[in-house]
Image (cartoon, rainbow, N blue to C red; front, side, top):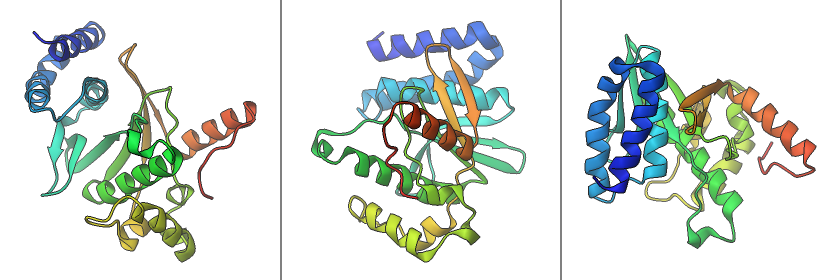
Length: 221
């Protein structure tokens, strides 16, 4: 067993202690799939364990769940769940910044989160971002509004930021205008738990934290 398999087995065992054998059985296919993707150098352990914890939360809520689920020829989402006539997509955001963006990390992360919301939310009735407690997800303020209340100016501003990093294909004006962010999952891997917040609750929590520490939250409003 390699380190990836070992760590994934440990988090699943931790989940089993909390939720029982039935949930572990439902995670078995995800475990095999992630191990194969790791062998192909497609996934990393820090991202994969968060997917598994997030998937567990959806399983407990009655969803049939898959990870690294292909939506089309371009997009593969992190966590995909189906329950009845509804579906949900959760994209994991760890806050990792590649070395080539060492001098523009805030703008890069803002564009990455915006592009995920804009592109993936069209494929699900409910879309969310999953993130660890130690990360700050820069949710563009425009996504806290319903599409009918978004102005052309703020949509074009966000598209301009996305165009700095995403051109093949670009994020469209219509994708940003119509995108919906429904939930933020704060994923505590240590405890194998998930806290569910609305985007507005998450935004207000961060705003208060920034105020308490006299720092600024780099989110366009």
